[in-house]
Length: 365
Image (cartoon, rainbow, N blue to C red; front, side, top):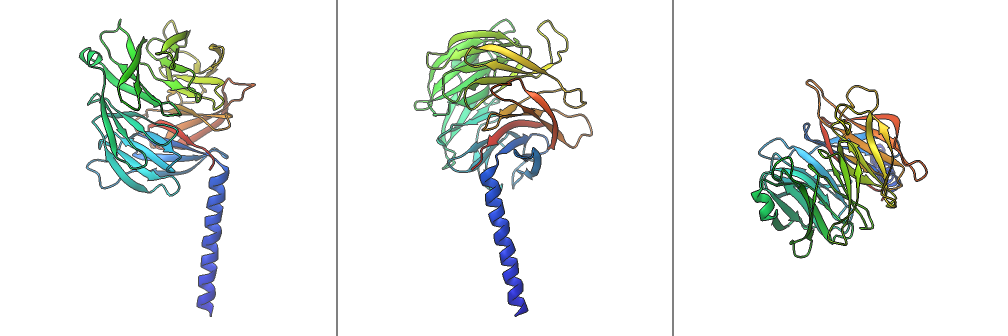
């Protein structure tokens, strides 16, 4: 009798724990961080801004993994991590964080993006100078896409990539084209034909971010210290050019009202160091709203990649790189709103894995 009661008690506890987990998953979002050097992804609870856990992405691979960027595909409730060391994309269950499978890609994994409808994921291969396109559901390779031959001949290589939420286009940056006086490029591809449909020359070292409604494409260019605003519906027609020092990385509010970029090298427009770290741009007027200074805290000197939560009330920022002997990296948290769009540091500094690189968001389920 006692044995039966014990088993029933254990079962009851397990059921309660499972229900608690489901309730948690349904009420709060999660922030995902790819820790390039430690070979892990970190999961942050949006409600409390605390680390839930860091999960190893190691498997029976030839080399220790080097996770670069991490995406979430809602349709499959799946996390995708591209691994530079093993030339693969790692697929994980978004609830258990268990590895489900891997998909081979080209050499030199860098940026990666999954569309909003769960049909395509594009991963940059900057060594092979191609993109690998996979289906995030079947985990099959759909296509290997080469960069334009004329840009390849000038030394170009792919760097950043995104897909619009509706999955109509893939938009990539091609960097290292020609000498320092020549443009780098933004190239727009059809996701049906995988062929180039438009391109635009921009400043050196560009990244890309597109509003959820597909209306405007923002292009921060780090070495040119500019943010270009292009129209993806009109062959990448240039709408605006803004001066933003060291502009790198891209995030935007879900309501398409504001665009954010970081100042990765910490430079000013005239050279030297800059106290301004995050920049807010009004997406409608295409004017700079303001900027946020670097926190006066050791270890937060490098502002890298950023993401915004589903409510448009928080911005999360990875501080990449690490000092010798370091064992952890940092993600910092900023409050934003439609009335106060300039990011305000919340004094929340979350310890994650070493060299946090890509960052993304899982909305409440």
